[in-house]
Image (cartoon, rainbow, N blue to C red; front, top):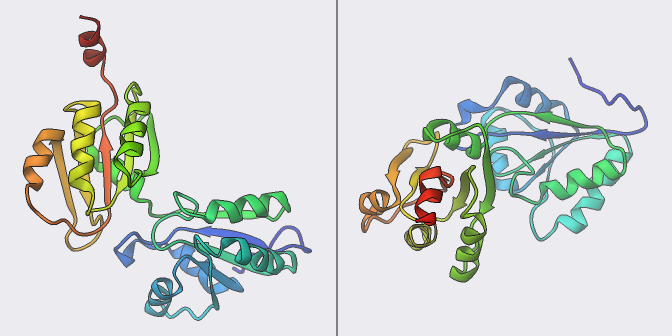
Length: 241
């Protein structure tokens, strides 16, 4: 069944989730939409091109990433206002989550373009689901700042939060980040997930100090998602003493 906009004068913007590693995680609906749309706006056309070729999809691609979003936003909007259907995809996971896709979504909303979510993989939810930490309330803040002071300032800002905290982090900074977490938040329970859904998937659980020991001098590779326990009642009580 071909999906058409309910508004015949405007196209539709599809927010299509793609795998975060394992190609088998793409949904049947996502594959159908990627085949049916007139254009795919991708964060990295080379990366998305590999995915499309794997599934035999020949839909035209255009790039949309941090740095060209202002120019490309107008181009994509023109396609949508002419009645074309556009799929937005990121390198991996759900578009608009910690990437410039949200700006295109805002623009589409402002111009009353129909927007349809095509749900699927998300590193945030995948990491949280296997963490064993409370999932009823959480705070996701994307990538932690590169610079130490800004990173520690953000951790200080969230130190009193009772919700589970989730961040993305680079393997090159993980040792420094764990040190900052230990010094700012204390020896909390933490879960470090790496290369989720891929061959070398790894999930490390323990207190911050234990994770530091487990990593040691290892040079980690791949994207990391950190899940940190929120401030507990015990921590609050100890501060009063």
